[in-house]
Length: 95
Image (tube, rainbow, N blue to C red; front, side, top):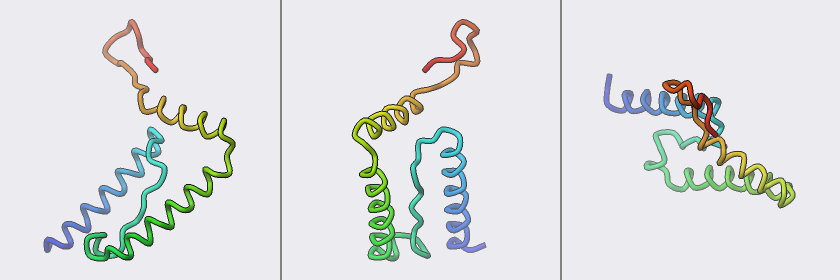
């Protein structure tokens, strides 16, 4: 297997892992796809893809009230700090 095929396989695995992490903890909002071959080979297309995703994200956030935006952001960051201590029976869930 050539180095390019190895790199493409690895990128696919990283993308799949990111999707699994998102499903588990909900930290990642979106995964922006790269142009074929990677962003380093096509900066303009990578910029267009990023622009489209960021524009959509901003449009959806703008539709929310300030209160809802703050609440959603607070909940998202609370999830990032949430963990379970499986080694201690004294405090099984800390948030």
